[in-house]
Image 1 (spheres, rainbow, N blue to C red):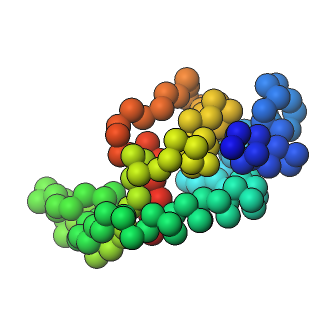
Image 2 (tube, rainbow, N blue to C red):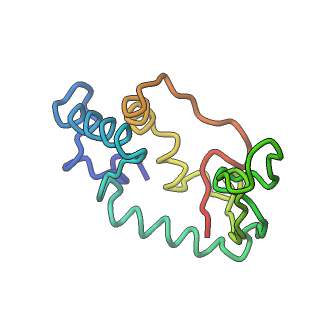
Length: 147
């Protein structure tokens, strides 16, 4: 599967460098990120690609690593004694997830294709105002499913 089959490029023409639609999306997402600390791109991934990703995750779910732990919103499992007990870094919550790691995904995985796409990397770099971005070379973490 090619990245053009995964992304909704009719709505978001980010594959054509310098198109007004692509820059408009980058500007909107950059603004949303600075104002809300997140941005959303509805229907960015095609329904067909999402269905394939869901099938892939479902097929691998039994092999997923189960992580059950106490951690804070920053994913730290310990408290910081130099901060007050009510500080966000010291508020621990139970987390129970199953993770399907990058190395468990087929080379033709639509999630791998999405993650490794230069188009997507350039979009993210534009949104966050950094770049160029480089793929994570960790065996397990570049992209994964969390169930």
